[in-house]
Image (cartoon, rainbow, N blue to C red; front, top):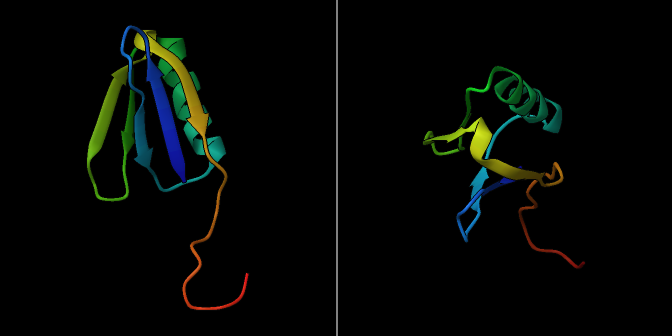
Length: 74
């Protein structure tokens, strides 16, 4: 699923593809905000994205979709 992180004082958002559910990501965000620590996410390619919780302006979680493969009519 796609996650977009809006960081305060930055004109662009951070967009990454992550494994897991929206509930898991929301729990990670809540934990980071409660502790005043870091939000640590790993994308599908294994790259780590670490953002200070205090700098997060918003977090947009895309819908959970399965990728369609093949040819067919829509």
